[in-house]
Structures are given as C-alpha cells and as structure tokens.
Length: 256
Image 1 (cartoon, rainbow, N blue to C red):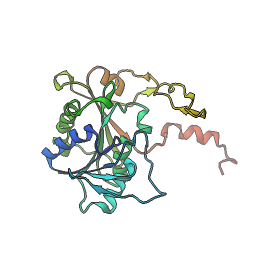
Image 2: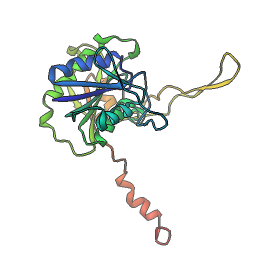
Image 3: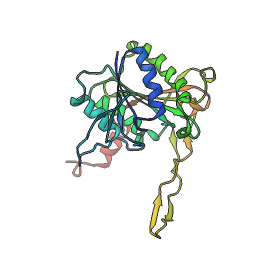
C-alpha cells in the first residue's frame, strides 16, 4: 500500500514519527505535514499566499500551511503517485465528539476524502499530550497498524472517513476496538479577558467543555472504558430528519 501521512501538530511531532514507523512496515509512506503546529485549523485552506513545500533531511515534506493545505497540494500536483489511503495523526490529544468540527487532524483526513481517497484520522487521548515523547505514541500507532492490515476488507461509502481515538498507555491496557458515534461536549470554558504587558486588552479562548453526552455507545464512553474508539464520519452535514420540519416552516407562498 502507498500511504500519505499528515497531521496538525507539525512535521516534527512525535505522533507523526510514530505513525510513520508503523506505516513503513506496511508499505510506502510519504509524509506531507505543516511546518509548525496548526491545531484547531479545521478545514482552512491558504488562499492569500503561496505554499512552499520543503523536503527535510529525514525525507518528510514540510509545508507552510494548514493540514488541509498539505493534503490538498499533495493530491493535486506535489506527489507523482496516488496514495491508497490518507492517514492523519497521531494527534497530541483527543478528537472526541464536537472536537471534530475544529480538528485539523480530522480536516486533513476529510480533505483526502473530498478528493476521492480513503482516509482515517488518529488521536491519542492522554493528559498533557504535548509533553509526551515518541514512545507514548507507539502503542496507538500499533493499534492503527492492526486496522490497516485488514483495510481491504472494509468498503466505506463515498465521503466517509474513520475517526480513531486511542487511550494512552501500553497495549496490554487497551480493551479492544469499539464502533462508536460522536458524543457531545458542553459549552467551552469562559474566554479569559486579560491585559498584555503593555496594558492592551487581550482575549484567551477557554478550554473545551466537559462531556455532556458520554453515554454508552459514544466515543467518550468507549475511550473512558479503555477501548479504542472507531467512529465513521460523513462529510455530508445535512440533518435529514429535520428537512420536513423546515419544509413545513417554509409554508407555500414563502417557499415558492
């Protein structure tokens, strides 16, 4: 298999290196990732300046753009081959529930899916993940390797990707895989209003809210119980169950 690997933590992130190690055992891996951290950039594309890929000494390609940029240019001229699958991660921290809306990790996988390639996003659920070294990510990478070894058995519908969250810790602590739905978080913590050293008012966005819907069957519940959560995501955001409600609201005369 031929893999395209990206992330949102940057080309030097230990989670990316751990994932590259495992993918290299399964096939050919090409890394195209942001040149620095681009967490919470969602699906932003850079349209106001050129993107400049640079090949590093380890063969990884760094791009001065977003996670979605990296996958977009990789599939539209940067690479001279078509990857079999896009892998994004391993992210330093969870992408559970509503996190997927903001996540650059999920966005990189989603961009690949938009462009017609199968894709997965992978995250490590850990406390203070930014302080961890590559060893902490290797168990999660091994779990993803297990899934990719049987990838050919899976037939996902178009525009569908997998969001995978792996609990931190050694392999023996994991309790297997669980297919899950997205849970939901409560409102994020309050924005902090502060003053910088020059007396200017600044605002610091608060941390993500605590889980609000973490019932059995959700990604939150699975990871908390020690399982690897695997959530199919659909890029079609239409709320089909509400179409009739909106149609009734748009009564004849208004709708026509």
